[in-house]
Length: 322
Image: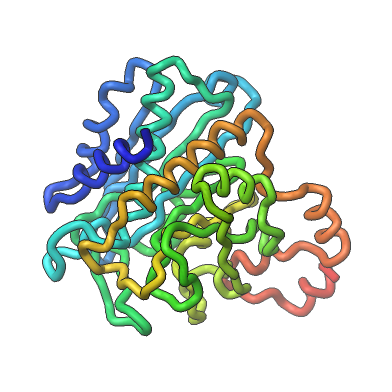
């Protein structure tokens, strides 16, 4: 069950000694059914981390030469810990916990003969001593590496659609305990909230679906001097695939560097949601956006991919578009 996998991952990550090898060990028993774990160590100005890539192959997935679509699940975070200033797993770790627990559940399903149609690729990173910094209304977690570096390792070309899971508690925008999803973001456009995802969300949670607003600046790259809700939609800045943010939320404002702030049942619900989407997306029964509507938007108003970059478009390029 999703809760059991969530508890297993939390216990594994709640350690000053956690590393990429910890994740490799978690998945060791699933190597014989084709599940792979890759660890890449990366250093930055603020420290180092280890990026994780977990691949759970599908029955008709591209890894095996099939044509079923590949779902990407990204666990967004600055770090799983903020040592030495904080002892223990931090709230910011929830995205990594959910992503890894979803991979663990899918791997266990595969070992029990329940094969999905398409491949699922899960990426995140493990850093037990990430920096934190003052921010209003609550302190933020930093990252040992820059956002463009994180995107390079976490947003992969094989991903046909992406769920970006991130703790999103340090704001006054979402006042709901549980989780919420964003509208679909693709190519600089903020599209409608996907009906299929709303359907799956209400079934998996047993409650009415909850969504959160997204602004244009939220889907622009970090480093442009503009505030962002958090990093949940940063994957959309470097891919043509549709991206949906899955925010793990609270009613109160909780700093990302707070310990004792992870709510296991809420994370487990996100795991269930992600697993159910993985089942349907590869099978072709779940769409992240309406392709006809998107094509009409581009036909009427042009490409908005310049919102995915740091450089503003020139007047000449805008005239060429419009």
